[in-house]
Length: 364
Image (cartoon, rainbow, N blue to C red; front, side, top):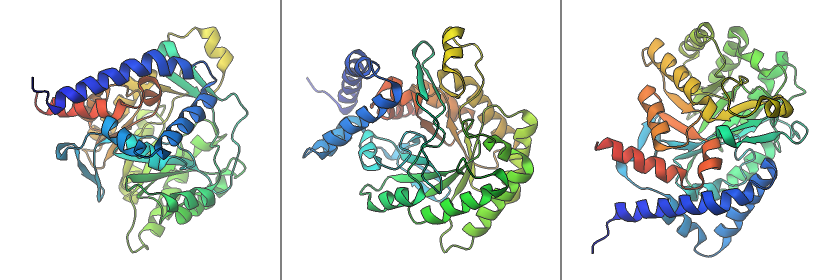
């Protein structure tokens, strides 16, 4: 009997999915979400240090096919599936995460100074909704340490730098923080993301208003264009913006000529959740991600693409757990997509599963 590569890939994904959902995920879900995150990544790091470990993971979780490649804002992505910011805030695991088949990795959010973030617990699972609520608060080691780590990385995967302001920096001084991060990371990342849309830094979302946002993006782009090889700058927006605010975003992109938009960040909405209200109230404030965000994120992508007449690239984020979810975002107009919560619920084979689904859709 002849077994082709497609059969092997399908069997591999099936076994990985069964093992992850029946054994690995239940074990890690016994622990607080933030603790489990570091435990899981420490396990991956250890496994990658074993001779042959990285090669094994790449064999198990990567799909190499020219039809998956995407050229966008001067970069060639080996596939359209990225890991969103927030998973590797300090660029600790870029080399290890590269073994899991992603086309690109976004690190951060990075701030000029190290900061601890909000008090723990600050990351909560909603298994009934396949979602997460977080109020991490830009916890990171600061831009100098992050840049140092990035300079030591061995993998060639495309890396984006998601940048923000320190909590102690008043909004009228926010531009200074974004400039510091931009300059320190310029030689270490392939593209930038300006994060003014996290709900977990007090007052940050006010920077999405037209005047302050135009000021920040204009100054960053001005500095960018003085460089020998300018880097793409993208803006990450909240899903909670009104149509009028989205219209402002479209005008700002046109005025500043930045590379594109990431849609979307987490939401402060709590609509139509299956998790009991008492549990949600007990968790409290934070940004909601995962399946509950899927519909709204797709709506924002479609609105931006339609209203702007496809004037700029959009990276789609929010509720992507399956190939069907990713294809829905791509059909709505997304040029690339990113996963985060789906990675936690679906396991390390998520990028491979989505990429194989995209390949299959090309021939259906």
